[in-house]
Image 1: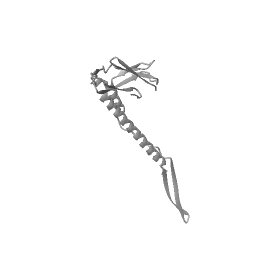
Image 2: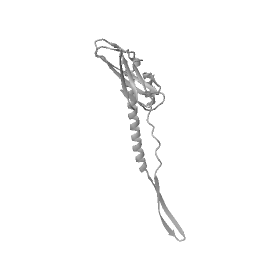
Image 3: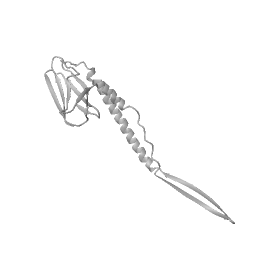
Image 4: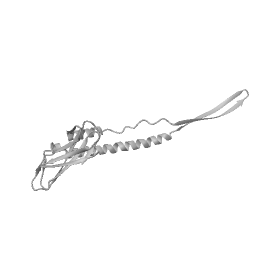
Length: 180
């Protein structure tokens, strides 16, 4: 199974041994990522997992709220005349329309939810990569058992295109073709 992130391809390979003897693979060499016309290199899965966690750490920072969309000032008053003197008694009231603030709060809640949802996905991906990283595996698949290996590959020039995952187990070679 292959998952394409923004910087890396994450490849999961499960090897099932249905034979009666253990199978031995070299975890660093039995899986190859082949993309015609592109340079792709295998990365350290544990370091990639740490980078995924680092890039998704932190807290959501809200943007400043928008200014009021409209302010209305109403002035009311009375005038009283006493001989040749007029006394004015006025009162001004300013009303601010904050209706845009409700849309702002809704937008911030949606963005914050999306941020933490992606952070959770990244955290689970990093945990999975660490758990099954090919660097931590001994490469022996016992008879009647299966083992999962994860790999990280980086394509130096980020362009989508067809690629193959080639898996070599003993004398058997398996090629899995993908289209992006």
